[in-house]
Length: 297
Image (cartoon, rainbow, N blue to C red; front, side, top):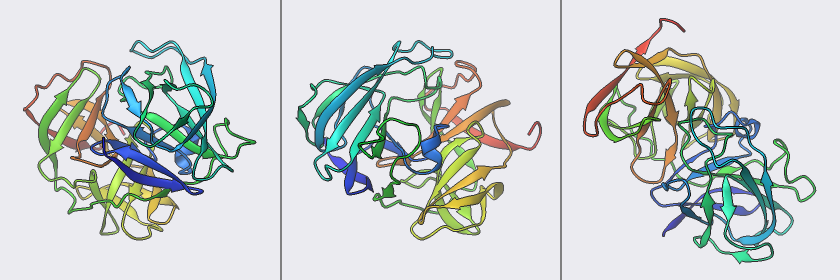
């Protein structure tokens, strides 16, 4: 499996499988608002074996209690694992939502089989299998805050933003729908900040915040999706930024949906989240349009 370098913190390079997704901001977890956490979506099912995104040595594994899943059956627990980085032994890499196959003390290289993906009770029902990653001080490896900030290595492919959110269903599950837009950038869903194209990264409106990715520095500005204002930049991380969602409701077939947005290392799709599993029932190949509504904001 080809692994692509997508992010770096303190000399530790994080890799994502080619064709997978990644997100810095699509989570309510506090570290995602400061760009000190990264989620990798390898494109696998729960229980399948994910490849290692780092080079290092497993130094600790802790099975942790998790809440019960809301509207889905969870694994009954989560797993936190810590790795000494081969690139910088002065830091540790924290991972969640994966149960390692290797033993404590064993080394692992990028791309080697690392562990089984868990469906954690911390997830929402629409959450896809992923690995949560942070780079931490060895003296403070576990807290929800305090990690080192990531720098995006992946070059985003930003094309012209779409004029409308219309596309073909490429995957239909009770929990979510994947839509391939007629107009789409390979890197993800494109929008504009004060006229400049960016890629969106986050969950709206459900997480209330979302991220932006561009080629150049983003410092401020009004974010527009399909010429509709959806928020304003509130925090800059250089060529990435965090914006607060202040947009309309999103509607498909008369029903409200959320948009779950990621960076893609392959073909990008728009993830539509229903209010409850099974309330949207399109067929693969069907064409859908996401409409914008100011009612009920």
